[in-house]
Length: 248
Image 1: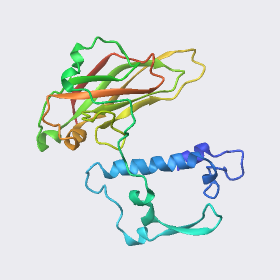
Image 2 (image 1 turned 30 degrees about the vertical axis):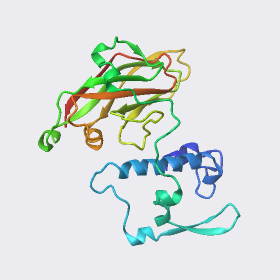
Image 3 (image 1 turned 60 degrees about the horizontal axis):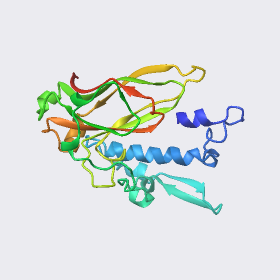
Image 4 (image 1 turned 180 degrees about the horizontal axis):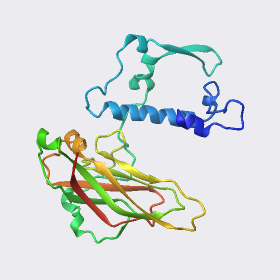
């Protein structure tokens, strides 16, 4: 609910529009926010972790709420209708129109062949050697495969974002999306105004153990890592990319 309070107007008596239930849907951001909630729920259920399933309690499923529809008629909406992605017509699909296409792994440089610093002014795909392969359950309980992207430098006055994909094996014209198991995560920073183009430093880490299981690539010596710049990355640089075993 935090985003409702952040976006709601504190000068209004009841924090309209987003800050109050009756008026939140008047703000277009409401629909983007709840579409993202649906997306996160789909990702959560797809992790394959015990307990990450749809609710089954009939009391919760049959709970309902009354809203006005686009015709200003009162309609009743049930929880059970809101967790069915097919009924909502929001299936998680691969993007067929993306510019990111599959590159044969034989044509991808290893990270040792890259000359750091690298500027992320375009899609960067490289193979990163893993410290161990085919770990058993006991070994996984002690340490995780973690992708480390170090020495990220960027302009603190710009919004920057890039996405990270691992072991994508796609047909021409396709790319993984955040709903696919090859999506490791993203790096994003909001701008800090008044810094007069001050370059800031950061790093990012992404757990890979479950991703490697989901993509059936636990036995591969190298992981193919793809960094996709989304915004503000024309002068963003990276000093190191590696995979390490991090003790739990």
